[in-house]
Length: 465
Image 1 (tube, helix red, strand yellow):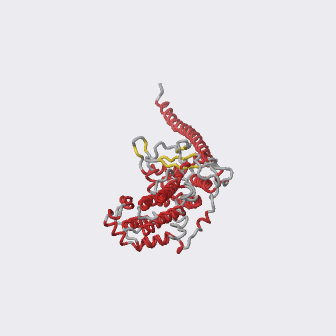
Image 2 (tube, helix red, strand yellow; image 1 turned 120 degrees about the vertical axis):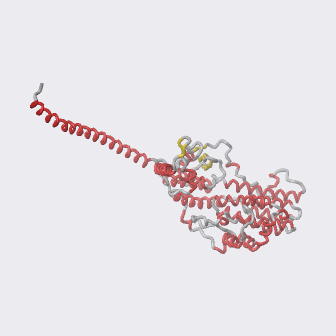
Image 3 (cartoon, helix red, strand yellow; image 1 turned 120 degrees about the horizontal axis):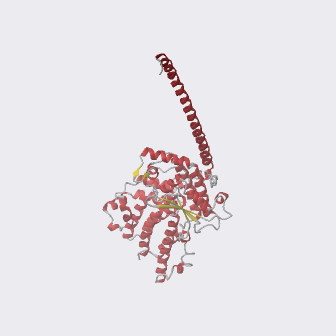
């Protein structure tokens, strides 16, 4: 048993040992925490270094070539205003009153007979004869371009579609003249539309050329009806055939179009740093199971993904190589009208878009030979900014539509001439060669995918939600 005096001595000693032990424990925990922190910091540094090295090397194998053509020369391309067909088309659009029909009825209106046309449409045609005259004057010009290469669209619907409503005006007026027996006057209207499509095919970008193929399809129906009418004379048919042959799609037209298209793609690439509503719709919607992530989280995900992919640099390099391949296919002798070597497939929630890549020979420019078509396709489908541009723009297959439309028109006119002069229908298209056509036009079928063209697809199974 401790005495009272001994107890009083032990108590202070025990009390003094407690803070000492706490201090020792605290120091031990600090040392442990310091070691853990050091290990974590070291791991973080090593991970950061590893990610940095990976990020810096992530584009190894994707060459950084220069622009695949002389960009300055294309930007400097200019047609004097008094020689530019589109100068007259713009003036005609300024004179043109708004079309009274809704857009969904334009297609049927373009082919309807005058006597069956909506009275409002007939009144519109009668009120816009001055615009029609300007349209015809512009169509007679040797050359024309909708906008300077590299410049953005005007934002005015009628101009950005090319001479869209002027085309409708001329076709309906041509129908009026046919019903009145003025077959030469009708051809004057149809010829204006025909030459307007030439100008667009020669200098337009893909979306402008797309609308020109739409207009050409409207026109073909009108011309076929006009040609089959017994009031149309053989000399008029022969003139129509000769003038239609002048519009045969040429490789140099497609090459110029691709160069202007390249400038547009590069301009669009800069916009992807601040994506528009289309990007929001297509790229910023992510789901975890059935739950859609909040907007602020999807925005962070989108920006982080672009950073890790090294955008827009990845897409910039890919676009240069892509256009180098396309231009080599168009401009290199022996490369034209060949089946694609591979296609890069970009899958969308509702549809898919593909970019065709062509075989590249040893005589192609250096930039086009940097990567094989298959390797280039593998890089293309990883470029997220490029994917948005592809979804926003039409595929280069518009060229096939131009060829097919041209072939259909000239064969229809040559066939009608054969029928008029010989009293029977031609036994085959080959029978038209020699007397009416120098050769049968190429329809581009050699470039169509017969199911054997290899495909490289993006990693998305169904596209964005």
